[in-house]
Amino acid sequence: MDIRIFASNPLLNTAAAGLIAHLLQAKPNAVLGLATGGTPVGIYEELIKLYTLQHIQFREAISFNLDEYVGLPETHDQSYHAYMQQHLFKHIDLPQSNIHIPNGNATDLEAECARYDALLDGVKQIDLQILGLGHNGHIGFNEPDEGLVGGTHLVELKEETRLANARYFNNLAEVPTHAITMGIGTILKARTILLVVRGTDKAKIVHDALTGPITTENPASLLQTHPNLVVMLDTEAGELFS
Ligand code: F6R
Image 1: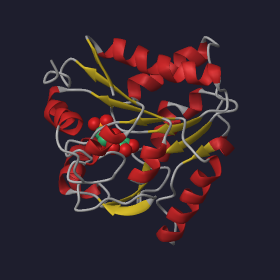
Image 2 (image 1 turned 120 degrees about the horizontal axis):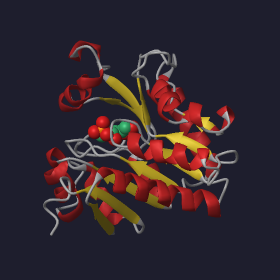
Image 3 (image 1 turned 90 degrees about the vertical axis):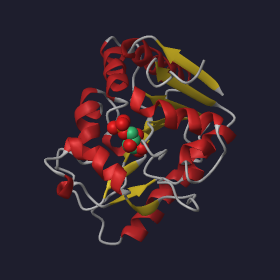
Image 4 (image 1 turned 30 degrees about the vertical axis):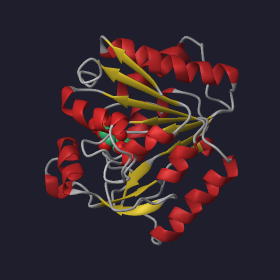
């Protein structure tokens, strides 16, 4: 495990984007596993800069997003479809046909999960999976539980997750109760995992996840088993590592 702590968020963003840029330069058809939420926004901004400067291109790349809310129209500004367009896709040359995000509005959600897994099977392995971290240890929307699921599946979001994400909506009632998420098995199969965590409010959960017992009650703790995990923390999130 490679844990790096950055003195500022801009430095973290540059380093994280640099890791992704190196991958794309070495392997233009890389498969990228993408996350949403507040954590990766600054990284996507850096990637857009690198693209604009013609240091990288996405023409041959393939992307798979971790998750999507159930029942939120794709046009809703808080859907992860809309988020990805706004923060990354509309600014770069990644072909629409190479973009994959679960369809949270499918009439048959089980079939949609199976369809997503079949697409993931088709690429065999994600080259680099970006992860943020929930306050309860969730990665993707794999919430703490007695057991975890390997493949893509429907989840009921924990109240703490809905509360944390309510800041992006008008009120808690608007936050969807369910989501489709890539499973822990798929995440752990990625060649490289980049876990990014920011803020003092996540210092304890990330420290527990990376140094505490491996338990499904803290899904991110399973990342300890991954052979190629890079962790990027800002000073606040990294305050318990010293
Ligand atoms: C998002 C995702 C979630 C977030 C996590 C942290 O696609 O899968 O696991 O990474 O909830 O969210 P932020 O970054 O908003 O604190």
